[in-house]
Length: 290
Picture (cartoon, rainbow, N blue to C red):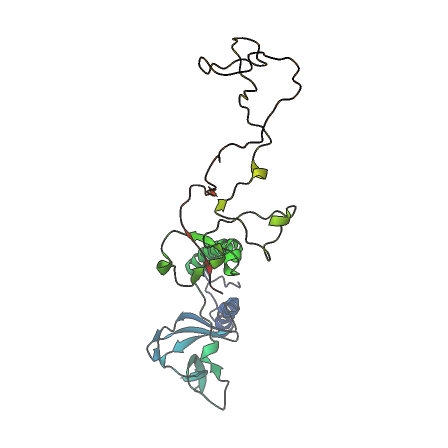
């Protein structure tokens, strides 16, 4: 910034050119308004109902006083002048007081009041920066939640609900395909479990057991093939059945056939289907409505 060295001895020459230099020196401050905007509110101008308070504004390179009043659509710059008598007796224009106020004129530029920009303080900017950081963090978290919720928002995901159907939350509905069923993971390598779009229901709560389901093992039992009065000599042993029983008495030794008849045991059970239900807790599967 230009400066004038006034503090000197010897009689400082306070002439009009000195005063003009001073005026030019502080005129540079007008350019600071460009930091904000071509039309800006530097100070004051608070809106009070339908009125606007006094303040200072910047209009296209010039900082001027703003005289408030009833709010209007446009702002104009007015100029008040004042003459002074000179030493030679002439009366000349000396002071020009320029200020902005609401109004309109065909002789000067009309500036829309809505175009005036009110700058934010550093404190406000810092607060907004912190708010933006918080907002950015929230946006990031929401995007993650959207990814997690996408199966449900599409209507093709389901969750467990542990209350009666009458208490299903608004916007949700029961997945009726899962009534009385448990889900099982898809297996593309298993023909019975390969698709989630067709033939996707199967299984039963009970299972009928058939001969083919029994283990490939025989049931051993002691088969009496003749009776004799002896304590030894059986193929695998002897069974005591009591005294004075009729038998072959070893009366002959030319036998080569063993008489037998086909027989089956009594039924092993009653044919009741096997319950294959695991321990369970009844729930309702629900999904968001489409």
